[in-house]
Image (cartoon, rainbow, N blue to C red):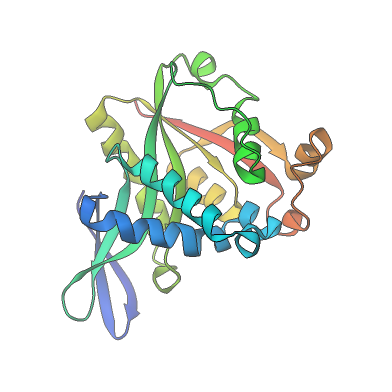
Length: 227
């Protein structure tokens, strides 16, 4: 999807990045980053202390969820080269397709998954936007050493050529963090539904994330239409 040059030097080198599909050779590494690093960084996970409480069996369940999402081969990965010239991961976005005839998600007993499912049910995206499918996402993550380069924004922008290649007009995502929400706004996303975390907890006390309001005030379901 084209090279992305940046001014920041990492280990004395100005990096060039490129974005491509998450091919089979990168899937294991992407899942590893999502389970072991994204989960400790993302606000719902951080403020519910989900990682600290996860048992090995639950970690395996998270791995299965991301592997299942990557089966459609629509995920995006941003790569650069290390000091030896070997491609290495800098950022990733686990994207997938949601369709109107997909089986409706039910409660799983997992606080975060059920929160996200509940939020999506607050608005009928298919009816509201008059669509039958859209590009969804299961997490955007930029490795700490590559932050400050605008890679998150570039990965979000890369959804447009991906959607066009798949004949999809719309991308919809739940953005849980103020950081990703600002990036989404810069990429052209708009609110489909936005509810403060305090209000979410008031409506369903099980969806409690103590202290999250100090980081991010609102959970936002956002969309962009590519014309």
